[in-house]
Length: 145
Image (cartoon, rainbow, N blue to C red; front, side, top):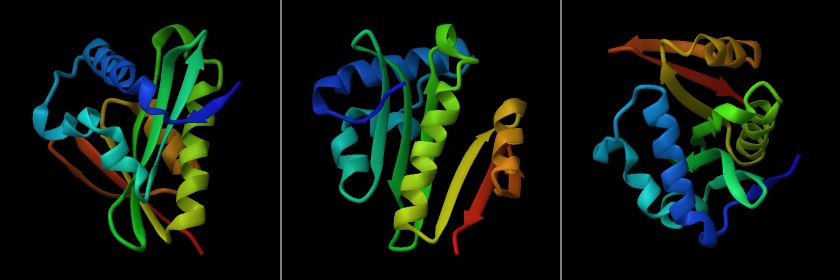
């Protein structure tokens, strides 16, 4: 399994993929939340990262690390195509982002919908602490030594 750094040639495909996964999970496109997909290079790559899992040259998974400030980042955009779930791809994408965060920041944040119980379980097992729950969203943090 190969997790690759984002390349601009995949920009349109990434946006289409992420929005299709969101739609499958019952979430609508939200221009306030999803604006980052319009310019991944600008929104992630200057001090963060964006990773891709490709299957036969097609985007089938993503994860990202967004710079917040000198010490803090956020893991975002962790998605895997339904056809490939249960094969460890999500774990690989998550740990790729988590490794990047641990090498470059002292605190990592993430958030998820409270309905995503499996994701929440994984975050807790990886040392994240739930810091709040608000309007169906659960917020987590993890500090690196």
